[in-house]
Amino acid sequence: MEEVAVTGENTPHQRTITLRGAVFIGIGSMVGAGIFALFGQAGAIAGSAVWLSFLAAGIIALLQGYSFAKLGARYPSAGGLFDWIVRGYGSGVFSGGIIMLGYFSVIITSAMVAVSFGNYASELFLGENAAPIWTKVFTAAIIIVLTFVNMVGAEAVIKAQSVVVSIVILVLSGFALAMLTQINSTLLAPSTYPPLSFILASVALTFFAYLGFGVLAFTGGDIQEPEKNLPRAMYISLGFVMALYVALSLGVFGTLTVDEVIANADTALAVAALPIFGQLGFTLISVAALFATTGAINSQLYASIGATYTMARDGQLPARFGLKNRRGGTQGLVISALLTMILALLFDLGAIASLGSAVALAVFALISVAHLRMVDETKASRPVLILGLVTTGIAILLFAWYTVQTDPQLFTILVVTIVLAWVFESFLARSRKPVVAAETPTLP
Image 1 (cartoon, helix red, strand yellow):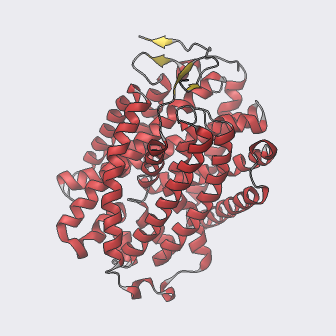
Image 2: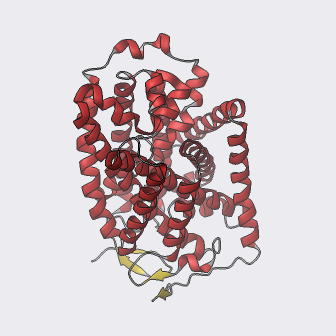
Image 3: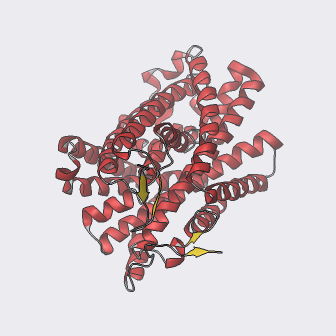
C-alpha cells in the first residue's frame, strides 16, 4: 500500500523524504546557520573558549532535539512545532503568540544565513575591497533563486540539499581534521579564557548555529515512516554537527588569535585556512560557505511552507498565506521570502544572529512546557524534558543579563519582538476562523 501524508484535512500526498534526505535537511540547515559567520561575534564574548560555548549549546540542542523527536514521532505533521504548540496549549491568543514568535524565528534565521552568503560571495568573487552593495545583491539573489527551487516541491528540495550538504561535509570535515593537527595549544590555554559567566552568556549566540534542527520538525508531513525516521534524523544530524562545530572552533581559535578572529568576523573560518592551506584553503572554505549557507536557506524556506500553511489554516495568518500555487509551494513561501529579504538587507548581521537565537530559545522553552503537558501521549522522559527546559531557561537568562549590560538597545529590540508576536496575534484573533479548506485553493 502506498504511504501517504495528510497536509490538509483530507488531502493525501505521497511521502517523499527518506531518512537520508531528512539527515541532509537537518545537517544542511544547521551547518549554514551561523558557523561561517558566528566566530567573530562569539569570540568577542567567550574569547578562545568558544568551543566550550558550542559544546554547551549543542547539549541544549540535543535535549530539545529529544523533545522534538518524541513529538514528531507521535504527531508527524507538515506544521511541525506549530501543530505541537496548539496541541499543548489549545487554540487561543497565547498559543497563537508563540506560533507567531516561532514564525519570526524562521524569518530571522533565514535572513542571517542569507547575509552570510552575501558576505562570502562578495569577497570570493569580487575581493575583500568589494563595494558593500554587492553583499546585498548576492543576498537578494540567493533568496530569489531558492524560493523558486522550493516552489517545485519537497523532492526538488531534497535533490538540491543532497548535493549541497555532501560537498560541505567533505570540505569542512577535512578542514577540521587538518586544523586540529596544526593548532597552537597556547592560544587555547584556559588562562586565556574570560570569566565563566561570559562563556555561558555566549551560549545563546552559538545556539544560533544549531537552530536548523527545528526545520526537521516540518518534515513530518513528507518523511517516510516518521515514527522511526524523524527521531533518527534528529539525533544523527545533531550529533554530527555538534562534533563538527567543536572541532572547527578549536581549529579556528587554535590558529588565529581572538583579535584576529574578531577582525575577520564575517569570514573568520576562511581566514583560518590561510596559514595551513594558503589561498587555496581560503577559496575552498569560501566555496563551502556558499554551499552551506545555500543549504540552510533552502531548508528554512522549505520549513516556511508548512509553517505558513498551518498558520493560515488555523486563522493565525491571512488566508492568502495558505493558497497553493499549481507549480508547488504556497503564497506564504513567497511572502516569507520577501520578509526574509527585507530583514537581511536592512539589519546588522550580529544583531540578527543574537535576536534570532534568543527568540528561538524562548519558543523552544515554551514548547518544552507544552510537551510536559503531553508526556503521557509521547512517552518521553519527564526528567529529560525538565532538564532541557532548565538549561534553555538558563541560557536565556544569561543572554538577557549580558545583553542588558553590553547592548541595552538589542535587549529592547528583543522585548519588542516578543511583545509584537502577541500584538499581531491579538489583532488577527479578532476575526479568527479556519481559512484553508481541506482542498486548498490553487493559484494560476
